[in-house]
Length: 341
Image (cartoon, rainbow, N blue to C red; front, side, top):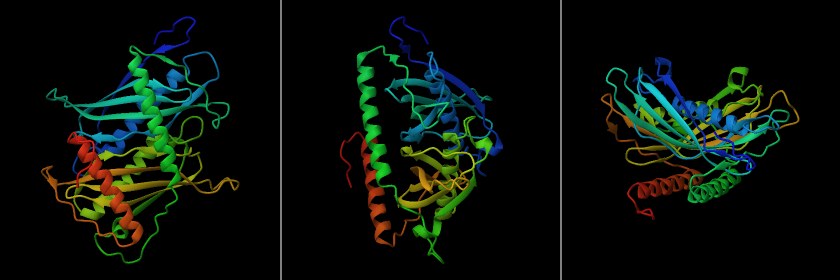
Protein backbone atom coordinates (compact mmCIF):
# COMPACT_ATOMS: atom_id res chain seq x y z
CA UNK A 1 0.00 0.00 0.00
CA UNK A 2 1.35 3.43 -0.96
CA UNK A 3 0.54 6.65 0.86
CA UNK A 4 -0.08 9.70 -1.31
CA UNK A 5 1.07 12.79 0.51
CA UNK A 6 -1.71 15.28 1.08
CA UNK A 7 -4.46 12.91 -0.08
CA UNK A 8 -4.27 10.41 2.79
CA UNK A 9 -5.48 7.74 0.37
CA UNK A 10 -4.24 4.20 -0.09
CA UNK A 11 -3.96 1.98 -3.11
CA UNK A 12 -6.01 -1.21 -3.22
CA UNK A 13 -4.41 -3.77 -0.91
CA UNK A 14 -4.13 -7.53 -1.33
CA UNK A 15 -3.03 -10.47 0.82
CA UNK A 16 -2.48 -14.22 0.41
CA UNK A 17 -2.53 -17.20 2.77
CA UNK A 18 -2.31 -21.00 2.55
CA UNK A 19 -3.90 -23.90 4.45
CA UNK A 20 -3.63 -27.68 4.09
CA UNK A 21 -6.91 -29.58 4.44
CA UNK A 22 -6.90 -32.17 7.22
CA UNK A 23 -9.34 -34.98 8.17
CA UNK A 24 -11.11 -32.88 10.80
CA UNK A 25 -11.90 -30.31 8.08
CA UNK A 26 -13.98 -32.79 6.06
CA UNK A 27 -17.07 -34.99 6.18
CA UNK A 28 -17.05 -38.80 6.15
CA UNK A 29 -16.75 -38.82 2.35
CA UNK A 30 -13.58 -36.70 2.44
CA UNK A 31 -15.18 -33.49 1.12
CA UNK A 32 -14.09 -30.37 3.00
CA UNK A 33 -16.94 -28.74 4.92
CA UNK A 34 -18.27 -25.57 3.35
CA UNK A 35 -18.07 -23.97 6.80
CA UNK A 36 -14.32 -24.63 6.95
CA UNK A 37 -13.85 -22.81 3.65
CA UNK A 38 -16.10 -19.95 4.75
CA UNK A 39 -14.02 -19.60 7.92
CA UNK A 40 -10.80 -19.36 5.86
CA UNK A 41 -12.39 -16.77 3.60
CA UNK A 42 -13.52 -14.67 6.56
CA UNK A 43 -10.14 -14.80 8.29
CA UNK A 44 -8.44 -13.52 5.15
CA UNK A 45 -10.99 -10.73 4.83
CA UNK A 46 -10.69 -9.76 8.49
CA UNK A 47 -6.90 -9.54 8.30
CA UNK A 48 -6.74 -7.35 5.21
CA UNK A 49 -9.59 -5.04 6.25
CA UNK A 50 -8.26 -4.59 9.81
CA UNK A 51 -4.80 -3.88 8.40
CA UNK A 52 -6.22 -1.28 6.02
CA UNK A 53 -8.40 0.41 8.65
CA UNK A 54 -5.34 0.86 10.89
CA UNK A 55 -3.09 2.12 8.09
CA UNK A 56 -3.39 5.77 9.10
CA UNK A 57 -2.63 7.49 12.38
CA UNK A 58 -5.70 7.62 14.55
CA UNK A 59 -7.87 5.54 16.83
CA UNK A 60 -7.05 1.82 16.61
CA UNK A 61 -9.79 -0.52 15.46
CA UNK A 62 -10.70 -4.08 14.50
CA UNK A 63 -12.74 -4.94 11.38
CA UNK A 64 -15.97 -6.83 12.08
CA UNK A 65 -17.86 -8.81 9.44
CA UNK A 66 -21.20 -7.26 8.46
CA UNK A 67 -22.21 -9.25 5.38
CA UNK A 68 -21.07 -11.94 2.97
CA UNK A 69 -22.50 -11.77 -0.55
CA UNK A 70 -23.59 -14.91 -2.38
CA UNK A 71 -20.81 -17.49 -2.39
CA UNK A 72 -20.76 -20.39 -4.87
CA UNK A 73 -18.78 -23.57 -4.21
CA UNK A 74 -17.53 -24.13 -7.73
CA UNK A 75 -15.56 -27.31 -7.09
CA UNK A 76 -15.25 -29.63 -4.06
CA UNK A 77 -12.05 -29.60 -2.01
CA UNK A 78 -10.68 -32.80 -0.48
CA UNK A 79 -8.48 -33.90 2.41
CA UNK A 80 -4.78 -33.41 1.62
CA UNK A 81 -5.32 -30.59 -0.85
CA UNK A 82 -3.84 -27.16 -0.21
CA UNK A 83 -6.13 -24.12 -0.15
CA UNK A 84 -4.66 -20.86 -1.47
CA UNK A 85 -6.71 -17.86 -0.34
CA UNK A 86 -6.19 -14.42 -1.87
CA UNK A 87 -7.97 -11.30 -0.65
CA UNK A 88 -8.19 -7.81 -2.14
CA UNK A 89 -9.88 -4.60 -1.01
CA UNK A 90 -12.09 -3.48 -3.89
CA UNK A 91 -14.12 -0.60 -2.41
CA UNK A 92 -14.38 1.57 0.69
CA UNK A 93 -17.26 3.73 1.86
CA UNK A 94 -17.05 6.08 4.82
CA UNK A 95 -17.67 3.29 7.32
CA UNK A 96 -17.23 -0.01 5.46
CA UNK A 97 -14.72 -2.04 3.45
CA UNK A 98 -15.50 -4.40 0.57
CA UNK A 99 -13.12 -7.34 0.25
CA UNK A 100 -13.10 -9.86 -2.58
CA UNK A 101 -11.64 -13.28 -1.81
CA UNK A 102 -10.70 -16.12 -4.17
CA UNK A 103 -9.93 -19.69 -3.07
CA UNK A 104 -7.85 -22.07 -5.19
CA UNK A 105 -7.30 -25.73 -4.32
CA UNK A 106 -4.03 -27.47 -5.21
CA UNK A 107 -3.34 -31.17 -5.40
CA UNK A 108 0.32 -31.15 -4.33
CA UNK A 109 0.89 -34.64 -5.76
CA UNK A 110 -0.15 -33.72 -9.30
CA UNK A 111 0.21 -29.93 -9.19
CA UNK A 112 -3.37 -29.52 -10.41
CA UNK A 113 -5.05 -26.28 -9.34
CA UNK A 114 -8.68 -25.23 -9.59
CA UNK A 115 -10.84 -22.31 -8.46
CA UNK A 116 -13.23 -23.42 -5.71
CA UNK A 117 -14.72 -20.18 -4.36
CA UNK A 118 -15.16 -16.47 -5.07
CA UNK A 119 -16.67 -14.35 -2.30
CA UNK A 120 -17.35 -10.72 -1.50
CA UNK A 121 -17.40 -9.61 2.16
CA UNK A 122 -18.20 -6.31 3.88
CA UNK A 123 -16.50 -5.20 7.10
CA UNK A 124 -16.95 -2.26 9.46
CA UNK A 125 -14.15 -0.89 11.72
CA UNK A 126 -14.98 -0.97 15.43
CA UNK A 127 -13.02 1.10 17.94
CA UNK A 128 -10.84 -0.85 20.36
CA UNK A 129 -11.83 1.59 23.09
CA UNK A 130 -15.55 1.06 22.46
CA UNK A 131 -16.57 -1.79 20.14
CA UNK A 132 -20.02 -0.23 19.73
CA UNK A 133 -18.42 2.75 17.97
CA UNK A 134 -17.91 2.52 14.19
CA UNK A 135 -14.91 4.47 12.91
CA UNK A 136 -14.20 6.00 9.51
CA UNK A 137 -12.36 3.96 6.87
CA UNK A 138 -9.26 5.32 5.09
CA UNK A 139 -10.15 5.78 1.40
CA UNK A 140 -8.45 3.88 -1.40
CA UNK A 141 -7.10 5.04 -4.76
CA UNK A 142 -8.84 3.44 -7.76
CA UNK A 143 -7.05 2.80 -11.02
CA UNK A 144 -10.22 3.69 -12.94
CA UNK A 145 -13.14 5.98 -12.09
CA UNK A 146 -15.51 3.18 -13.11
CA UNK A 147 -14.16 1.02 -10.29
CA UNK A 148 -15.37 3.50 -7.72
CA UNK A 149 -18.78 3.90 -9.35
CA UNK A 150 -19.29 0.14 -9.62
CA UNK A 151 -18.24 -0.27 -5.98
CA UNK A 152 -20.67 2.42 -4.86
CA UNK A 153 -23.53 0.62 -6.62
CA UNK A 154 -22.60 -2.66 -4.88
CA UNK A 155 -22.42 -0.83 -1.55
CA UNK A 156 -25.89 0.71 -1.94
CA UNK A 157 -27.38 -2.61 -3.05
CA UNK A 158 -26.02 -4.59 -0.09
CA UNK A 159 -27.01 -1.84 2.35
CA UNK A 160 -30.62 -2.00 1.12
CA UNK A 161 -30.65 -5.80 1.23
CA UNK A 162 -29.34 -5.85 4.82
CA UNK A 163 -32.11 -3.48 5.91
CA UNK A 164 -34.80 -5.56 4.20
CA UNK A 165 -33.46 -8.80 5.67
CA UNK A 166 -33.35 -7.40 9.21
CA UNK A 167 -36.90 -6.10 8.86
CA UNK A 168 -38.31 -9.59 8.12
CA UNK A 169 -36.17 -11.38 10.69
CA UNK A 170 -38.71 -12.23 13.39
CA UNK A 171 -39.21 -15.94 12.67
CA UNK A 172 -38.43 -18.60 15.27
CA UNK A 173 -37.92 -22.30 14.50
CA UNK A 174 -40.25 -24.29 16.76
CA UNK A 175 -39.88 -28.06 17.38
CA UNK A 176 -42.72 -30.41 16.32
CA UNK A 177 -43.54 -33.79 17.85
CA UNK A 178 -43.56 -36.87 15.57
CA UNK A 179 -43.07 -35.07 12.24
CA UNK A 180 -43.63 -36.88 8.94
CA UNK A 181 -40.69 -37.61 6.59
CA UNK A 182 -39.90 -34.96 3.95
CA UNK A 183 -41.68 -32.24 5.91
CA UNK A 184 -39.96 -29.09 7.18
CA UNK A 185 -40.34 -30.25 10.79
CA UNK A 186 -38.75 -33.64 10.08
CA UNK A 187 -35.32 -32.27 9.16
CA UNK A 188 -35.17 -28.97 11.05
CA UNK A 189 -32.27 -28.86 13.49
CA UNK A 190 -30.75 -26.63 16.15
CA UNK A 191 -27.36 -26.34 17.79
CA UNK A 192 -26.74 -24.55 21.10
CA UNK A 193 -23.25 -23.20 21.70
CA UNK A 194 -21.71 -21.30 24.60
CA UNK A 195 -19.38 -18.64 23.20
CA UNK A 196 -15.93 -19.01 24.74
CA UNK A 197 -12.64 -17.13 24.41
CA UNK A 198 -11.42 -19.33 21.54
CA UNK A 199 -14.44 -18.24 19.46
CA UNK A 200 -13.70 -14.54 19.89
CA UNK A 201 -11.42 -11.77 18.81
CA UNK A 202 -9.12 -10.25 21.40
CA UNK A 203 -11.85 -7.69 21.95
CA UNK A 204 -14.53 -10.08 23.13
CA UNK A 205 -16.89 -10.65 20.20
CA UNK A 206 -17.23 -13.69 17.97
CA UNK A 207 -15.26 -14.08 14.73
CA UNK A 208 -17.63 -14.02 11.76
CA UNK A 209 -15.94 -17.15 10.43
CA UNK A 210 -16.77 -19.08 13.61
CA UNK A 211 -20.45 -18.17 13.25
CA UNK A 212 -20.50 -19.14 9.57
CA UNK A 213 -18.87 -22.50 10.30
CA UNK A 214 -21.56 -23.30 12.88
CA UNK A 215 -24.28 -22.16 10.46
CA UNK A 216 -22.95 -24.46 7.76
CA UNK A 217 -22.79 -27.35 10.24
CA UNK A 218 -26.47 -26.95 11.13
CA UNK A 219 -27.50 -26.54 7.48
CA UNK A 220 -25.58 -29.71 6.63
CA UNK A 221 -27.43 -31.65 9.34
CA UNK A 222 -30.77 -30.46 7.95
CA UNK A 223 -29.78 -31.49 4.42
CA UNK A 224 -28.49 -34.92 5.54
CA UNK A 225 -31.64 -35.60 7.56
CA UNK A 226 -33.81 -34.73 4.58
CA UNK A 227 -32.10 -36.84 1.91
CA UNK A 228 -30.04 -39.34 3.99
CA UNK A 229 -27.07 -39.26 1.61
CA UNK A 230 -23.70 -37.54 1.41
CA UNK A 231 -24.33 -33.82 0.99
CA UNK A 232 -22.09 -30.85 0.13
CA UNK A 233 -22.55 -27.09 0.22
CA UNK A 234 -23.31 -25.76 -3.27
CA UNK A 235 -23.75 -22.08 -2.47
CA UNK A 236 -24.58 -19.62 0.28
CA UNK A 237 -26.91 -16.74 -0.34
CA UNK A 238 -25.95 -13.49 1.36
CA UNK A 239 -25.11 -13.94 5.06
CA UNK A 240 -26.17 -10.91 7.09
CA UNK A 241 -24.68 -10.17 10.49
CA UNK A 242 -27.25 -8.03 12.27
CA UNK A 243 -25.47 -7.59 15.59
CA UNK A 244 -22.28 -8.61 17.38
CA UNK A 245 -22.16 -11.74 19.54
CA UNK A 246 -20.16 -11.23 22.71
CA UNK A 247 -18.13 -13.69 24.76
CA UNK A 248 -20.29 -15.52 27.29
CA UNK A 249 -23.45 -15.48 25.14
CA UNK A 250 -25.36 -18.67 24.44
CA UNK A 251 -26.16 -18.85 20.74
CA UNK A 252 -28.83 -21.00 19.14
CA UNK A 253 -28.26 -21.83 15.47
CA UNK A 254 -31.46 -23.12 13.87
CA UNK A 255 -31.92 -24.50 10.38
CA UNK A 256 -35.00 -25.46 8.38
CA UNK A 257 -35.64 -26.57 4.82
CA UNK A 258 -37.40 -23.90 2.76
CA UNK A 259 -37.30 -25.21 -0.83
CA UNK A 260 -36.22 -28.18 -2.92
CA UNK A 261 -35.65 -28.43 -6.66
CA UNK A 262 -34.94 -31.74 -8.39
CA UNK A 263 -31.29 -31.71 -7.28
CA UNK A 264 -30.85 -29.00 -4.67
CA UNK A 265 -32.08 -27.99 -1.22
CA UNK A 266 -32.37 -24.48 0.20
CA UNK A 267 -32.00 -24.21 3.98
CA UNK A 268 -32.63 -21.10 6.05
CA UNK A 269 -30.29 -20.69 9.02
CA UNK A 270 -30.99 -18.28 11.88
CA UNK A 271 -28.60 -17.37 14.69
CA UNK A 272 -30.03 -16.05 17.97
CA UNK A 273 -27.86 -14.80 20.83
CA UNK A 274 -28.85 -14.91 24.48
CA UNK A 275 -26.64 -12.74 26.77
CA UNK A 276 -27.15 -14.99 29.82
CA UNK A 277 -24.69 -13.04 31.98
CA UNK A 278 -26.24 -9.67 31.12
CA UNK A 279 -29.80 -9.22 32.36
CA UNK A 280 -30.05 -5.81 30.70
CA UNK A 281 -30.16 -7.29 27.19
CA UNK A 282 -32.74 -9.67 25.75
CA UNK A 283 -32.28 -12.46 23.23
CA UNK A 284 -31.70 -11.07 19.74
CA UNK A 285 -31.23 -12.18 16.12
CA UNK A 286 -27.51 -12.02 15.34
CA UNK A 287 -27.23 -13.49 11.81
CA UNK A 288 -29.25 -15.14 9.04
CA UNK A 289 -28.63 -16.76 5.66
CA UNK A 290 -29.81 -19.27 3.07
CA UNK A 291 -27.56 -22.26 2.28
CA UNK A 292 -27.98 -24.47 -0.79
CA UNK A 293 -26.89 -28.12 -0.69
CA UNK A 294 -26.76 -30.94 -3.21
CA UNK A 295 -26.93 -34.68 -2.66
CA UNK A 296 -24.07 -36.85 -3.94
CA UNK A 297 -23.59 -40.55 -4.60
CA UNK A 298 -20.56 -42.46 -3.33
CA UNK A 299 -18.99 -41.75 -6.72
CA UNK A 300 -19.54 -38.01 -6.25
CA UNK A 301 -22.35 -37.72 -8.80
CA UNK A 302 -25.44 -35.58 -8.21
CA UNK A 303 -28.52 -37.42 -6.92
CA UNK A 304 -32.22 -36.48 -7.04
CA UNK A 305 -33.47 -34.79 -3.86
CA UNK A 306 -36.67 -35.93 -2.08
CA UNK A 307 -39.25 -33.21 -2.60
CA UNK A 308 -40.11 -31.08 0.42
CA UNK A 309 -43.70 -31.27 1.66
CA UNK A 310 -44.68 -27.86 3.10
CA UNK A 311 -47.62 -28.14 5.50
CA UNK A 312 -48.45 -24.76 7.03
CA UNK A 313 -49.23 -21.53 5.21
CA UNK A 314 -45.92 -20.05 6.37
CA UNK A 315 -44.03 -23.07 5.03
CA UNK A 316 -45.83 -22.80 1.69
CA UNK A 317 -45.00 -19.09 1.52
CA UNK A 318 -41.32 -19.74 2.30
CA UNK A 319 -41.31 -22.51 -0.35
CA UNK A 320 -42.58 -20.09 -3.02
CA UNK A 321 -40.04 -17.46 -1.95
CA UNK A 322 -37.28 -20.07 -2.19
CA UNK A 323 -38.54 -21.12 -5.62
CA UNK A 324 -38.33 -17.50 -6.72
CA UNK A 325 -34.71 -17.25 -5.57
CA UNK A 326 -33.91 -20.54 -7.30
CA UNK A 327 -35.46 -19.46 -10.62
CA UNK A 328 -33.82 -16.06 -10.43
CA UNK A 329 -30.38 -17.59 -9.93
CA UNK A 330 -31.04 -20.18 -12.66
CA UNK A 331 -31.98 -17.39 -15.06
CA UNK A 332 -28.86 -15.44 -14.12
CA UNK A 333 -26.65 -18.47 -14.83
CA UNK A 334 -28.33 -18.89 -18.23
CA UNK A 335 -27.85 -15.23 -19.11
CA UNK A 336 -31.47 -14.14 -18.73
CA UNK A 337 -32.62 -11.14 -16.74
CA UNK A 338 -36.07 -12.52 -15.84
CA UNK A 339 -36.66 -15.92 -14.20
CA UNK A 340 -38.61 -18.45 -16.24
CA UNK A 341 -40.81 -21.12 -14.59
